[in-house]
Image 1 (cartoon, rainbow, N blue to C red):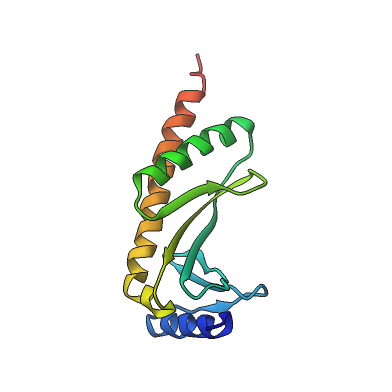
Image 2 (image 1 turned 90 degrees about the vertical axis):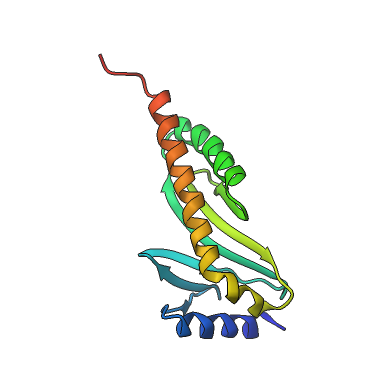
Amino acid sequence: MGWDEIRELHVEFLAEQGFRPKVDDEGDIHFRYEGRHHFIMESQDDQYFHLLFPNFFPLATETEVEEAALAASAASRATKVAKVYLNPAQDNVSASVELLVGEPADVHAHFLRCLGIIGTATGKFLEEMSSRLAAATPAAG
């Protein structure tokens, strides 16, 4: 099954669930969940599923980059299935769920749980990042 068929399968599923999916210029599926932008990424492999929550935490300083790398690692270790990581430019943090499936539609039974897992992972990242930045910032006095 090619990406065009897989994409149509996922778009139809999302629409049935009340989402408003759109295919972006790169061929990925874009939709909003709880006000946040998510994407089902194009894959040439019909047994691989990639759900992305991109660029949810911007990074501006070297300290933020260093602390975000540690916070992302901690969030990924603590959350099943999710990955939290810095983008290649190291100016933003993203989260994703990646699954191996027997058939592309198999993920639909777990889709809402996947969205919840991304929420858990980003929440853990934000908690960890908050405490790391607080510890790295000298107290005013």
